[in-house]
Image (cartoon, rainbow, N blue to C red; front, top):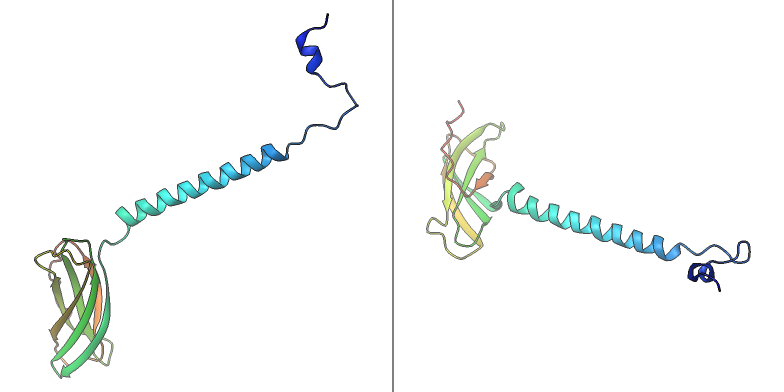
Length: 146
């Protein structure tokens, strides 16, 4: 009588070694899935905690006079949240000629995209209208540059 393990062994030199293709393929697929999962978690955490919660862009600006410019800003914010954006304008020399903090959606409506027009008073004729930093917490009004 033979032992049970002796029946399962292959005679040496008679057969090719077992293929490792299935094992390697499985390892590669698991590695790709794991890296994808880590990437998705990293993206979620960055989007949730690392990126600005409020984003804004200038849709249009119009120079109204030598002392004012109207800036049309589109703001993406959280539902029910408020937004505070720093808007500014520059003169033909490139120097800042006006700056203000705009409160967007002060009551915190359910809208995620809000458009606001703001008339900015300038110290001289403006050639641009820009939106700077936007956030969901109040921004203190910065001192005007000389």
